[in-house]
Length: 392
Image 1 (cartoon, rainbow, N blue to C red):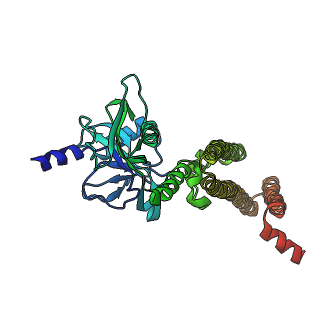
Image 2 (image 1 turned 45 degrees about the vertical axis):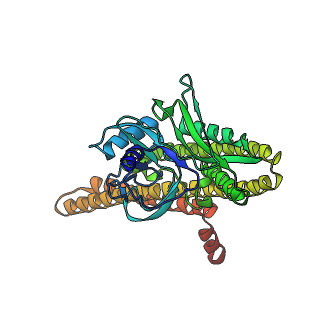
């Protein structure tokens, strides 16, 4: 009977065990959804394996209401009433790009748990020598991260038998809104000094991973594909130049927003470093070194991303302009030949001359475009610059 009660309580758990940080497959079904910009959404299947959403539109959600709606979409047979951040990060393999296969990428993310039916807080175990505590304020309504910090701070101030305490596990209490809760309960246990350094490293890693600095050390940019820009979805030869300039402005605006966000996050992390230095100078310096390295790689990656996106725009623009010029030449050639054919049977000198001039103008426009394009590449493309240096 006790076993059944424990099983029922854990069926809807939203607790966090500090010792477990990553996992690949769940032993029991927990309704989870995970998101990574640029990739299709993932959700937990009933067999405990991560599933990939087949829809190309299912990607990159961050709003709480959108995540709740997605939970209901992923689990239509379940009564999803709320969401909460999962207790720890999970390493998930097999991510598919928005366009589909191949599905070969692995990302470490913090999923959201879909709360089913009536909310039940997890019954926490209290080992020997540990202490149970809770904060419950119905006037306060905060998110998971707030209550996690509150639990950590409470345990950090406790000392039992001359031993400092640390959080072993915690669970949020009654919900008061979407991904908002009225309190937290927690278990504090004597801190193991041998593993404290490891725990600090994990905590620092999670802080860095919560910022833009988590971009695979700068190797993978988590952003929506530029191919979603309206410019790529429709070709309009008449307004091509204006649409191209507008697309360039949108790319630059997105780039500036990302750089500004990184700078704000850098300021926050620098403030944390100064605070850490007061109590743990060695740990603070290690944190600063990692923080600086990631910052430099992230900024470099964002600049590289911006360069690649601009190149994509240039390439598509060039293809469209060239295709339009080729069509103009093709039509002018056709009209000129048709005029010549008519001239054989009847006087048609005026029309022949007119169509010939049109064809010459089309060729001249193509020639001018090619020269301007080459000059542009001379200014921007290193390969063309090297080629020109040796052969001209």
